[in-house]
Length: 217
Image (cartoon, rainbow, N blue to C red; front, side):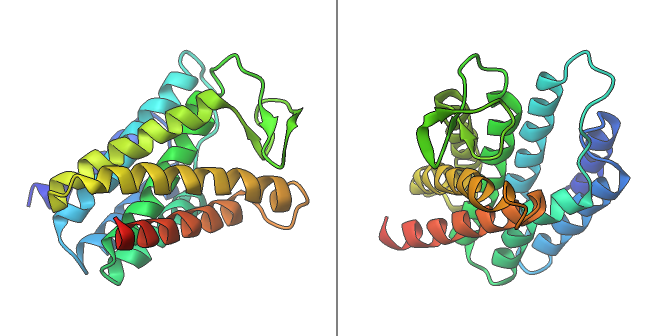
């Protein structure tokens, strides 16, 4: 019963620190239970851990600021929808790849902007762009994203007791994170996609990478 109340407790904390609005907090609860129902509560731990470190990263970036970007249910669904679908079909590595991608992308976006390095456009690494530009990447931002994805893998190892999940999460999350930047540069900057669409495609790519890596490792 305590574990089943965890999504509600986490949503309350996220709402309290204003990392999500009310609709986003409700979205966290819904997606969490959509994972628990077809699987079991242990699949919930990586999700809760992901939301926790993203919330911490958001607070670090906006420390001392009263106003900052507050995510909505659209952001939650775009980042978590693929992971939920993989949980429904019982494909853990696809689930892990999607979740690691969403985590890596969020951490790269939040913490990566604190670095002093000027971003380069992923489609042309010789071109420098302003921070926050879709498609802009830095070594620091990519590295913190890789670490965040690896942390999701460590949590996932508790579920399967297979150390290779750390490698799968780190690699799939990083590939998905870079895919997010590429989709942002190619499609979002040209207004073919909005941010939610970019995130959905990126987590799909990360999920596919997780499935492939899980098959070979």
